Length: 103
Image (cartoon, rainbow, N blue to C red; front, side):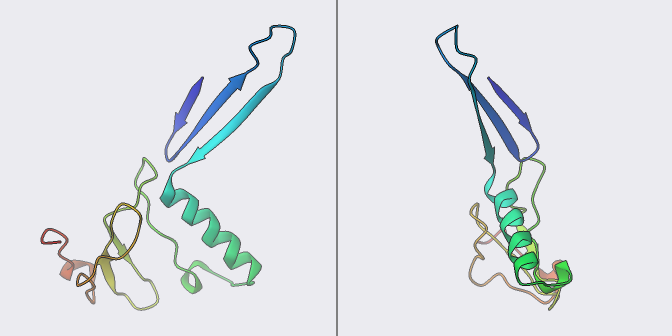
């Protein structure tokens, strides 16, 4: 059985033997959502006060990376690939100046 919501999915497996009512729940989190969670954990561990000290990736409704990411500390924005890695040569001083179409 599969339940999906936003950037995560829950898969529920049940035992094939009817006398055992064991269930295994596997939560599948999209890459961007997983990075957001890990970044928040790291910020708490380092006792950082806010998101501005540890920028969070922007995710779309399916949990994938938004194609343009911005650094709130510098104001620089850049294009990313499907794994969230910055595409070379796309960094600009503002969101208005970013061009992802040629990359």
